[in-house]
Length: 512
Image (tube, rainbow, N blue to C red; front, side, top):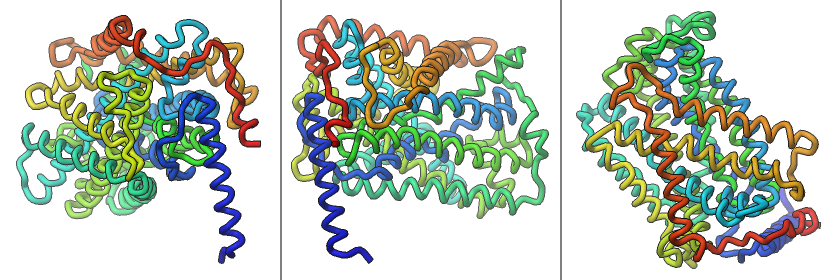
């Protein structure tokens, strides 16, 4: 049992961290406004919840089923995971030096050798719109999963309107939960992390021991399926990697809540890396369990439920137990969406604090009672509803809008990494990669350049209005918007602190 002396020592240490964190933030040009209530685990939990293998793997499983089949799932996941770990490591090293809520755009501004404010502005818009798009996609996926569950349990007919209403209800609940305060979000984020880990364990155990039969190892690791219309096996396999790449998004959240995290220059970078590494392991075990448990591949792929893993659960474990497994995924997706709103609202708060958004003074206000950027929370909530509204009329239009989620976010992720490699004056922080920094950084840059090109190519043949890849259009719109808005407004009003030299003290000096 802890003694009073132990408690006093712990309190003094936390106070020391709070003072040092505030001092480092001041060195970066900002005052401490948000409440620091996140520990290292809570910081990790936010990113881990947004990656959410019980969301991304489940809702995008069909992508890999059509493009590559079992081999794209079993081999594609660890392949993508390795390169994403490199991206996360390279980002984390920068986060240790600049632990601010702005995250990526602030890093870009500090690391660019020329045109600092414009680099920060462009990366900021890619990051913000990508964050909102991911929030929209995650909560829409959660709505689809919940509607599938309600259809199976109480017979509610699934329509586009009902799914959209479910999406709005879920999103508003996420806005309310985030608005209540940091303590509630911290607690629910921790619950979410354990729910994901326990949920994966339960699903894996059920699918391992309940079904009467399983697929062979040769089927899971070598079987190739192609429903894309393309004849090139390597090309189809690469298209199937989108399932994994889509799931591995949102881990920049650990940076966005850095100003609410104690010992941020160490805890935030660790949160970025650990969330990806744990998701890599948990997601692979989950995907292998689901794929081994497939009873009828084609029936699952074409299921009327609209969610192949749900059909696999029911076929393998029976109706009652299968619905229970689906409920585990639905709850996890609810937690995932909540964390997305947390991350997006901190990003919009920071961007507004630097006067990037119209009515920035409104969005950058912090509620003195809860210590949260309440106005920014409702800004991203309403923006996500608007972004999802085309799904009422056209699935293609909705996919066109949300395609920026993967490509746009990874462009924002890797731009500071590239600028860091080109900046000879960069000084490493308390958490760093040492001599591995350069090779890992360049691997990250090359991988993101590769996937940006890959996921702009047509995923299916023949190319029609419904199968056309709108990602290039989405990326072009964001790039043009950022460029035009920079000349119309940004260069006069954007106030991000980007000094001409790298004159920030190393975090190690502040924490001495």
